[in-house]
Structures are given as C-alpha cells and as structure tokens.
Amino acid sequence: MGSPAASYQPTVGSVMDVDRDFYDRLAQHTESRTLVERFVIPIRSGRAWEVPAGWLCRVSTPEGPQCGDFNVWNRHNPRERLWASRTRQLQSAHVTQYDRLWSTLPHLRPLLTITADSLEWYGVDSDGARVHDLLGSRCDPYVNRILTGEDFDFHCHSNLTRAVLPYGLTEFDVHDVLNIFTCTGLNDRDEYYMKPSPAEAGDFFEFFAEQDLLCALSTCPAGDLSIPFWGPDARDPIEVCRPLAVEVYRPADELTDGWSTPPIAAYRGLHGMALPERPTGQPG
Image 1 (cartoon, rainbow, N blue to C red):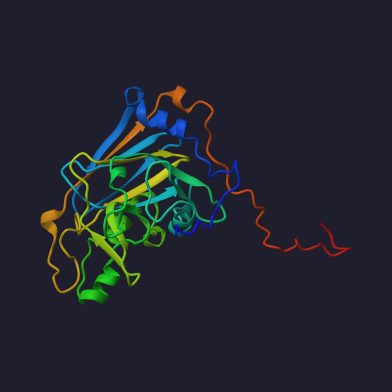
Image 2: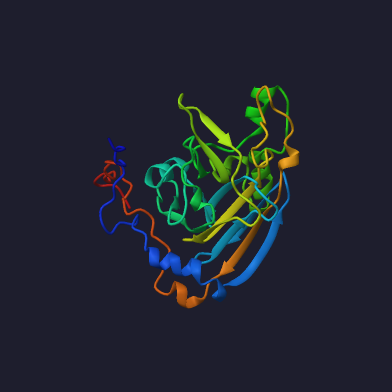
C-alpha cells in the first residue's frame, strides 16, 4: 500500500507551480553572477543581513558540519515573515531544491525559493531522517532553564534576538526557524529527534529572494549535533561548533527577465463580515 496523498493539492497554474527551468538557470549560471557581500558567522553567534528581491544567497559550511537556525522577513514589513507550519503543509517538513518558504497571513506568498542544495542526495535515511527541517523550533534559554535549571545566553533564539536589534526588531519578532544542515525526524512515539549533520566542509544551501528580504542566521550552540546538548549524556559540545558562511549574489539581468515579486494572496480579507452601513441622515 502506498503512502496517502498530500492534502494540499493546488490547481494548475497557481503560485505553487514552480518554473524549474528558471531556477535551474539561476543555479547553473554561476559565472554570470556578481558577489556583492560575503561574511562568516562565528560559532555560537548570529547575524542579520538583507537580500534584495531577485538576488541569490548561499549559506555554506566552510570548516565542516554545523547547523544553522534561519529566520526571514519581508524587509519592509516584518509582520510578513516565515510561516513554518504552513510551509510544512504546502511543501514538506524538510525542504530542498525548488521548495519555497511561505509567509504569514494575510500575505501568504513565497519569501524565497531554494535553487541549490548540495545535501539533496541525502534523501531519507534508515531512521526516516531528512535534512533542512521545519519540524523543530530554535533552541532557547527558556527551555534550557526548564531542562537543566541553568541559564545560557547563546541559544539560537538569543543569537537571533541580538542579530536583529540593529534593524529595529526584538525578541518578539524572532520566529520558528528553518534548521539548515540539520538532520531530524520523528521516532515511533512521534517524538522529535536530531542526528549529526551529514554536511561536510563546502556544502551549501542556496536560495532566490522572491521579495526584499531581511534574513538572520544563528550558528547553533550544539554545533553539528553529534554531542547531546541535553539529557543524561549531555556535555558542552563546543568542540563540534563551527562557523557558517553567507554569500549574496546579484545574478545577470537577463536571467531574471520577466520575473516579478509574487503578489500577496488575492483573498479580500473580509472573513464573511459585511462593511458597516452609514446611518442615513448623518453628515459625511
């Protein structure tokens, strides 16, 4: 017996249709792109940066496996940000090339489209785990206090909070993440688990900005997840913590001819409520 079909099935021609040839051209014509910015995020820290609409961004592992917790917003309106749960439904709980990250209501449109993933080969392992997950959220000092009774200020939530402060955002703007290079799944009891990242030095995850983006990334304090961070066998995994690198590229103009930022969802937003009628005889 095969697996049940996905519940979210779009009609032909919807915004969920992906022009794979378009994104393949962006991924393959690396010789015609221009490197605009490159930086390295040290271990147990975070950084925010902008990616203009129509540009490309690559996250890589320069020194070996390292997990990264990723947030993304509309640069001009931070209320429009990654909606992890809806992206799981529209795409998958783990994402790869041609998948999109979708924004929150009432916008509900692609923030970005994944153009290249050097770990796409990993697929599904013998435990049912996959890479680049939307299942788990970021580690945070609040749950750390619950689990250990101690405070630690360099969890991904805190790293992201510090990263976005220069952009006028706060802890309340940090949201559920895409865990880049992270290998995860659900066990037989439907419990979330994490495995050591299969990434090696030079692996990468690349995306195309469908709108002007503000991005933020934390180098997870658990490193490559090969050492337990919590539980009876836990110890400080700093020895398996490594930096992540970010590169922002402007593709050649001819590669994006005809492309435009997706519009917000067409629903009018009345939710079945009629607009109030003006009382007769009243001025105005």
